[in-house]
Length: 136
Image (cartoon, rainbow, N blue to C red; front, side, top):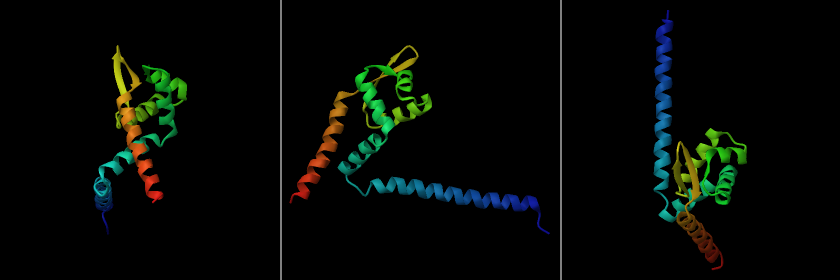
């Protein structure tokens, strides 16, 4: 007769092994795929990924229209929760598009114009080169 405790421990070990294998494969694939592409392709993909969510577009627009706004103002303007706003701000910060200023206990955000121009240049170059290639 099988020991129930042994069976449970055996199943847990198998599940942990399977879970860890899947996680490791996912992480390895995620990191290795970027190496297949050049710097320009990765830059365009990163920028457009950040811009690929309507909430982030709304956040960027609100910050551009209301310099030095904080998370509470973004919650009010978008209707999204504070944790959701914070997650989106983190994604936008990944491309360096935001400047932060601390006032008391609050962070205030504004657009980094130099980085905005750099993002525009990278994405514009992609579309210009694509258009030129199509017209050959």
